Image 1 (cartoon, rainbow, N blue to C red):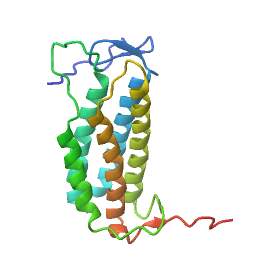
Image 2: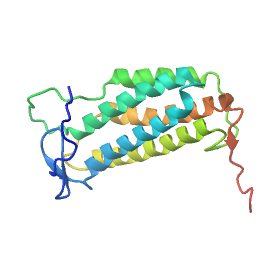
Image 3: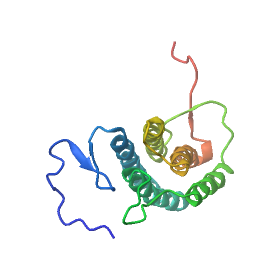
Image 4: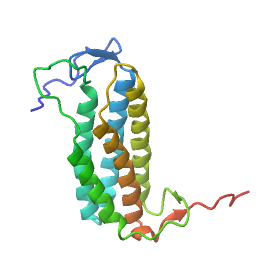
Length: 193
């Protein structure tokens, strides 16, 4: 159980932050950027839920699960796998979380109109905020992929799959809330030349 008694600890005043393992890293460290961007994506999902909670309860429930999973992902990234035994079992993203989000994507995608062009963010407030969350999730994925390439840094395959599926889900959900694609704003190449 997480217990936060004091919000400011002053331990980060030197520009470092503590990882779940107890190690300290600079606040601009790539691992910190990765889980910080996952947190940012989660905040964007929360913003999108303001627009889905009443009119799209099924999608909102899916987003609520994703928000919880994104916290799991942040915990996973904040506790690097060093190969050393820890006093506790670190929280890791697992394949069943990937399978569940794939099931949600497939469920929403069944009803979507086929794409005729790339989709511009918009059409409705719900769709625009879901697209914003999608782009932040993609940035988190880029940080995670870069982190996984660094010697000595491990990012599990399930974590990488999960963040990739999150952005896929958000794209499909953005279309679903746009009357299953009927209200999508389509890109017209060279339209304003």
